[in-house]
Image (tube, one colour):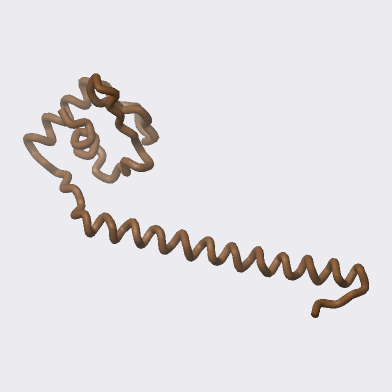
Length: 109
């Protein structure tokens, strides 16, 4: 049984980087972390989902290029958000510097 396929069969929108983590320490795979808003599945449920996925495959893994394109888009969004925060902090620092200079009686050069 492949746990990943069983979980994705039942929860096709589940993100393995956020919603669950699988692990294998040499004695077989198991769910190490479970962050979905439903109870962690039992071994029986996983087996049932696995069998269902083999009989009626629903989940098609994304093509590597599609996955990479999604990751690049996420990275660009995060970069843009960080740049915006950096601009805000820079403006705040400039304002604080001007206030300090004003209090000291000086002016910005």
